[in-house]
Length: 253
Image (cartoon, rainbow, N blue to C red; front, side, top):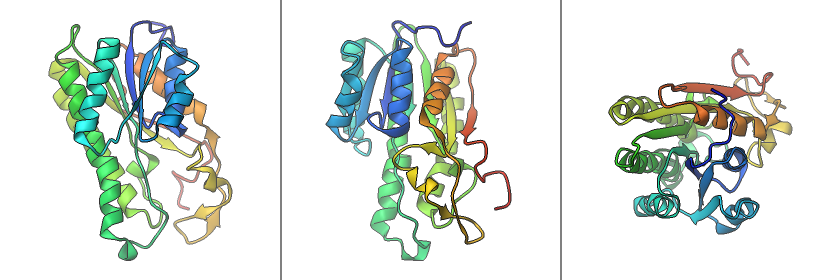
């Protein structure tokens, strides 16, 4: 099977689809012939991504922390495109590095609400739609992180929620079997986006030093998502790590 052949008729929802990793994934899918519903808080970036694909891309401003809004996102996608074959569950947020003892409860809850609750709402609605459509089934790709394996200093909320994403992925992968829903996770390290640009200026390391970290082109991540999405449903990439080759992840920095 040529996994990168045009996927005419396939339908994806990409959350956080207006910028960064979500934008890169959406463009990769659109370029391969997918129809894509673009979800995100702000309408303008979604419309900017969609304008080059007038009949393929559907901007749907969505607050992923609102379960009613997430349900409406899926319903609007089905109304426009007929089904949902893929959810790239990508929307997430972090906080500036700060000692955990100084973190406000509001900041903690805001990260949990987006990175954990919002991702669950996406999975739940994908199951609702995918098990009922004909032919049934589909694929969910959750955006974890290198932080789903190892923390950075002063990142307890982000790290805890990304570890929790791994639990969501495993549980949903098990529960999805009966419905032909394949669930996997992509863990990304140092893709060059606006959020990661600070890596090039130096970020705190585990030993207390500040060091510049290598970055990779975010389009590589888009191609990774496309590869995972293009597999037949009989196969699943449960966990996929794509990272800048020389980033300090596997060593003892």
